[in-house]
Length: 187
Image 1 (spheres, rainbow, N blue to C red):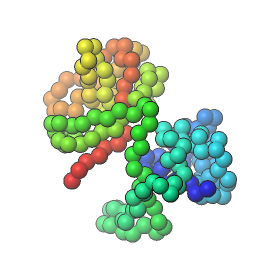
Image 2: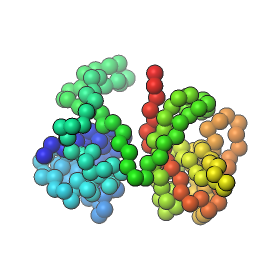
Image 3: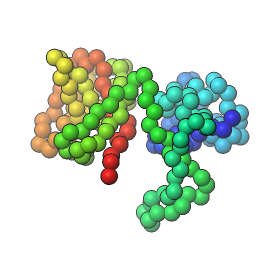
């Protein structure tokens, strides 16, 4: 079985240690590295554990003949663009049950008109994972608040809106938030 653990991990901006710590039960970065490189056999149990740790479906970690991968042509660094030393591919975003989408209709903060945001829904015990990340939070009467989560204080969350000059919002008893995980921008 050909795995794509490394490609998925890198596309999500995670280190070996991040994935190892997020596994249930936690494991070591060395073990994740061995599973990525094929030095250790990847079982279905390991695939499911690693997939859960990276919040992707287990199928995203396996090379599939019917899935179109996007080959990486260059790595953009401080010294310009260079060819990768070994073949790599990008993992296209794949929705799963707790994902929601947002569309930016008016530029604000770092977002431009037409940007598409993919966000992962989090329940209150996991709000801390979204500190310093942009989130969507439901409000009464079908409204929403969007901004940078700067604090979680018991049953209250503190959001800093993305528009310049806007005041911090404090929301109480929020049933869920959606943390932005991917930005799709057309150029």
